[in-house]
Structure formats: structure tokens, C-alpha cells
Length: 353
Image (tube, rainbow, N blue to C red):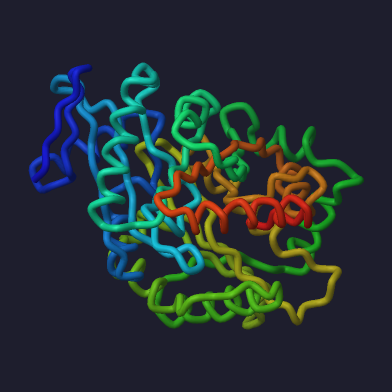
């Protein structure tokens, strides 16, 4: 185990069997962690994608001040140190009262030590507040990538309030939901591997329809099924008799009373008068409220209010939470490639996440 000390009394420890409980306690009891910062999710990524993790904690005295989850992962032709890939929430989690330049200096130094030791081309660090973004920008001259998630606050917006005051005739939400109710459709929870494979079939079909490159994710879904219990996830199929309209995969995280919507399955052969996401979202909102959850994270969404997905989620009362991806190069070639990508991305104006 490598341990380093700073002049500001910060101690950095690699994650190990002795401090794993500290990691989980910090993640579960502060408001800066998430489902994706849990060590179960780390195990999922290691097992599914064979990536090498670099997880470390920052202590101040006996208290954890931050948890820092990273993996070695590829970006095009370059391998770098990346904040929790394949995850909607992947930020470095720093306790709110510890956000200042000293701790970010220590985190940056440790990350750069790892990139040098592992001969990696870059560091990609995700942060979730403008304050942390600004503190980290002193270490790079590359512009950050901006993305984010849509989040619904059920403490402020109850299902009744959403139905009566957020939904509108122009948005069509009530009409699209009532169509499934009128036609006798039901939402059923997936209980066995056969139904999970059925969900995956329509999930994969939806991605192919959008021309999104997919990994061999059936093994990924099976790994999730093996590691998590039914209490950790809710997988649903929207059906009428034996006909499937679509489905929704959500992670449940009681410590922060949040449900994370992560994978949407759609039957692309249904008439365009049916819009399954509306009914699936609404079913989740009612179920989450019934179970006492405070928030629903609707997942990564383009940072563009004109985008159809952004409009659909905001039509349920979601608000946008920004995520900033900062890149610090260890390679001149990576720096050139990143700048070229950033220029082309902004020229094309197609920020799809």
C-alpha cells in the first residue's frame, strides 16, 4: 500500500481491505457520492470490462475528505486514467466542507503520479461543481467537455403535482400515458434470466436503431444480475398480453434515497402513436414516491434544451445537473488530438451523450 503525506495534513491511501469500510461509509453518508461510487459497481466494471482500477481515499486526520475512483481506459488510440467509465455519475467525490485548492492539489498530484507510473497518455477527471472545475482548471489549458444528467426532485414535485401542474396539453404527457392505461397495458418486473434476455433484446434493438455502437452487453447484464440482489435494481417490461412495448432498467440506492434510470428498451416495430418512455417514466415516478425515494436520476442527457430527449425529461419536471470532464495530457500527440476533437465537436453542434 502506498501512503503519501502532504504539508496540509492530508493523507492519501490506496483502497484496500482495511479502508474499504471507510470508502463505503463516506459514499453512503455524504451527499456527494452515488450508486456508481460504490465498491459493488467497481466490481461490476472490473469483471465486465477487465479494466484496471486506481481507487484512493483522501484523509484529513481520521476523517475521509474525498474518495477518488479511476480506471485505466482507452479513448480512441490513447489509454488514460479515467473517472468511472460507463457510469452516469463519475465525479471525484469531495466533502462539501473540504473543497479548496489544497485538497485538489493533492488529488491532482496523486493522479499524475499514477499516469506517469502506468505510462498513460492523459488524465480525465470528472467533477460536478463549478467550484471544483475552476480549482482543477489551473492544471490544464484544454477546455473541458460539458455534459450532465437530468434529475427529478420528488420532495419538491410529488406525482400529483407533476400530473396536474407540470404536464401540459402541448407536451402530451397525460395523453401518451392514458393511451397505455386505456389499452390495458401493464408494467411487469423482470424476475428471471429469460425476461432479462428479452429486455436486452429490445434494449439492443433501440441502440441499433439510433446507430449507437454497442459492446457485448448481455454478459454485462448477466454480471449485474449475479452481483446485485432484486432490492438493488428494478427492471420492468411494458406489456399487453405477450406483446412487449419496451422496458426500463433502474438501480435503487437507499443510502441517498435515489433511483437511477440507466437503460431504456424500446420495441421499434410499434406504431408511432405509442410512446413507451412516457408510461415507463411515469410508472417509475409513482413507484419511487410510494417507496419513499427522494430523487430520480433520468440519466445522461445532451446539454441542449432543444434536444428531444432533454425536452422529454424536462417535461416531467427534471432539472439539469452539469458534469465537467477535465483532460490533462501526458502526451503532446494526445493534446493535439483532443484540441482537434473539441473544435470539430463544437463546429458540428451535435453533443450526443
